[in-house]
Length: 265
Ligand code: GLP
Image 1 (cartoon, rainbow, N blue to C red):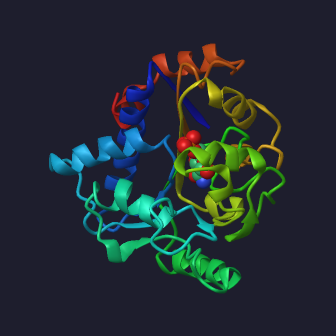
Image 2 (spheres, rainbow, N blue to C red; image 1 turned 135 degrees about the horizontal axis):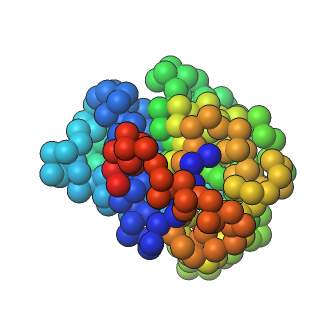
Image 3 (cartoon, helix red, strand yellow; image 1 turned 120 degrees about the vertical axis):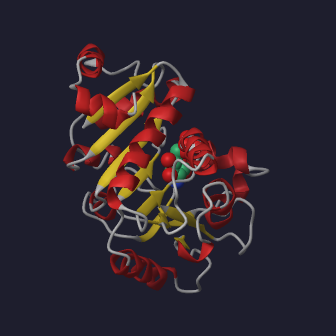
């Protein structure tokens, strides 16, 4: 894992976007992005959008696969992840909507929709770079604690804590769905690269457990310890409970020139 500790949330967005853009450029115009919802990657998306607007990055031939979707919302609900991805990713990054995929949480048969989603990712040649946030309980996508470390896209039940965390997007917690479709941890591990962003003290415990805790289904994010190319970009507050902070900073301060360039630093 490559741990990058940034001064603040703005720098997290810039560094993470530079990392994603470098990978996208290396893969080529038909890059397959894995995209996450939530507040954490918004700065990253804004910076990618700026690059697209400035002509520094062209994603017009790219595809995207979202990590997850609620099950139980009416189709077209503004907080459905299909709608959130359209607002925060597809439009600002000028992606072709026909190539942006979200698990179909409105399908009468969500289990089948999950299987179809895995097939669609495979047909696209797999995700090249997966953008991730982390839940305060360590979840990635909607893989809650006790998720199988080799799981694939499937129907899951949300924890009380995740529903409380996400209640801010709804009028009340009762409106937050109980169920979801989410890419599995095994699906996420198959991505060519993973870039996870986290900001704020509320994520400090989850970040510490993910990076320095045991590999455990109790902290689903810890599965990234198995990923061969995972970059974790956090601000000071989210990094505050990492025991080896000094070492991660020292690595960053002493990167060989070629790696500094890759970081966009
Ligand atoms: C949500 C999403 C995750 C996201 C996480 C953190 O429920 N399913 O993909 O990473 O929770 O969200 P936020 O970035 O808003 O803290």
